[in-house]
Image (cartoon, rainbow, N blue to C red):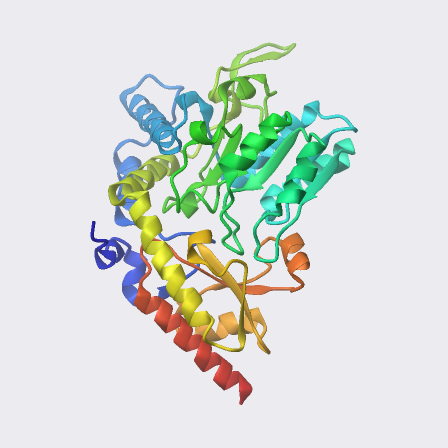
Amino acid sequence: MHYDVEAVRRQFPILSGGICYLDSAATSQKPNIVLRAMDTFYTSQNANINRGVHALAEAATVAFEDARKTVQRFLGAKHAHEIIFTRNATEAINLVAKTFGRSLAQKDRIALTLLEHHSNIVPWLQLKEEKNITIDWIGLETDGSLNESSIADVLSKKPKLLAITGVSNVLGTKIPLKEIIKKAHANGTLVLVDAAQMAAHEKIDVQDLDCDFLAFSGHKVYGPTGIGVLYGKEKLLNDLPTFLGGGDMIQTVTTDGFTAAELPRKFEAGTPAIAEAVGLKSAIEWIDSLGIAAIAEHEEHLLAHALEKLQTIKEVKVLGPKDAKKIASCISFTVDGIHPHDLTQILSEKGVYLRAGHHCTQPLHNHLGVVATSRISVAAYNTIEEIDRFATEISHAISAWKK
């Protein structure tokens, strides 16, 4: 099937001004269908959910639960009540850390990889402070892939949980999740997948992966900010204690205590992000209309072209895998003699937007021996011409900097 990127671009109002947006790993832009869905909700359905019996409240509740069913299908979950709405992937990971973590003792271990975003590091470090648990780190190969012997060594220590990214937000490294999850389960280890950088770029089937938990953010899958998802296996979610307390997460409350509501409401205290859930539903339907496989193929073509262009510039050093088939979403690099922040500012003045810094992955950058990197990240709406424009502006910036 022919992928019509220009037709895709016309659906994104913010792109009509001629900007070259290469920062979708931070947040993706939003198509008209998402903007219209949220506007329609606010102008014709707005009400609080679950509490009211009037027509608007019932319509809002149906819209919210339809969004949950859409996410269920998107992830291949067995039950809709295994989908918990959160503010973002960060809150979803914190939910697991703060609830599952209550059962951990001083002798217990948690496993992480050096590729993790701070959102999948700090909650576990907080748990380490509170419980004095041990955190074991899975190391990397020189190309940015996970070290097989390190995986085996860490899992042999039988950690209670492995929290692992699906795609690195710096190197773009794709992780062989199914294989690792199988090894983890053989050692009695549960697995939480941080799919924030994965969900927009490859098909996810949580039942096929057999992961125990999975988190992603709506704003990275062409949806709105303020909405995220935690998937968890039904039994595990039922066994976890409650997280936030308040309205709507209870069955009964007395002066002596409370009984929690059934899933998923058990973990959804207070008024949720209703319009944002509606927007997320539309974003997922938009992805499905294009086909995530078609999007992934288009993005692989863009990344391959970017790798080729960057490696022709002698001052540029690309970090991580150099094969576009082994990465998704992004490429990070350094430019000899120019700090990433300076480079980003120079390119921004030319209408080319990328990201610079440690990308919330300081342990990874320490391992790589660099303080900061520049990162481009692609999405369904980017073009080959934009990659060429980016590479040309890099060359111009280097020439100007040398003067």
